Image 1: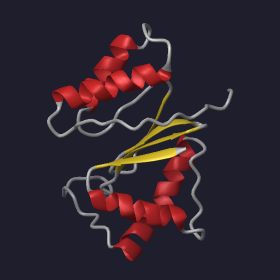
Image 2: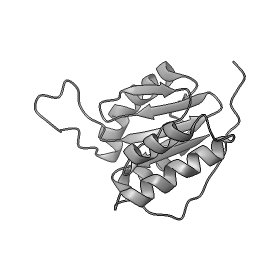
Image 3: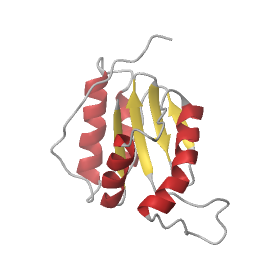
Length: 147
């Protein structure tokens, strides 16, 4: 599967280190497993990687400040700063340009035949209309498990 992080570039290196650590059990098999993985990672991120958890005073939980998208044979999972985890069944976009990407993918979902074409249209729309996004695009595919 694939793990895409948006926001601070520092998160990419930290998560690469965490994901390679064999002592940390990583489970991205379903929505609850992703949530539990990030719940268990939070103290590790604070203690070993010096994550600053403070955001807004009225936040209900400490923040990880990580927004990410996981795509693997089990599905598409969005991870958000307060450890919210959402599961998506058709498509999703995260980060700069995501609102344009989502609109393009929604508009074309029933018209295009391949997931690659739908994803490409989303990335191209996000890159066209958001100045913080740009091409080129590198695309990877994942075969989903049968339900």
